[in-house]
Every structure is written in structure tokens, then in C-alpha cells.
Length: 64
Image 1 (cartoon, rainbow, N blue to C red):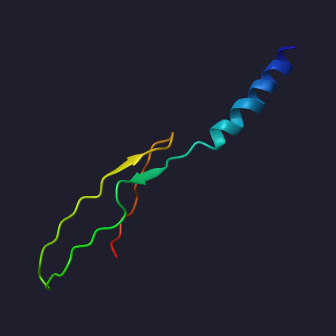
Image 2 (image 1 turned 45 degrees about the vertical axis):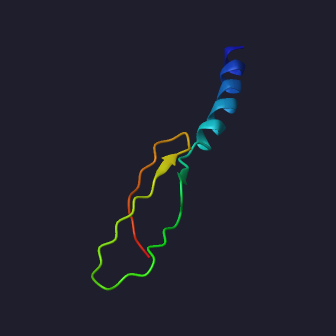
């Protein structure tokens, strides 16, 4: 009987753990700096939150 209960618990909880993942959500995904000239320093902060159920790890950032 214990074996059946243990197997049932494993079949219920293991798939739930496999689907947990981080999910990044940005307040805005783009920024228009307007007309600039070469050498201008432009700064902008992108706000984001982790909407997932796992830790969000950002390993590499690039700009376009």
C-alpha cells in the first residue's frame, strides 16, 4: 500500500517540478533615444521582474 501511495505522489509532483521555470517580464521592451549625434552619452534603464517560479539568471546582455 505504501508503494502505491509513493508512486502516486511521485507521478503527481515530478511533472510539476519539470515545468517550473523563470519568466522575464519587461515594463517596456524598447526605447527611442530620438535624434542623437555621435559621441552623445545616452542612458536608459529597463525595468523587469521575474514572473516565473524559479530563479532568473541573466548570463549575457547585448545591445542592438
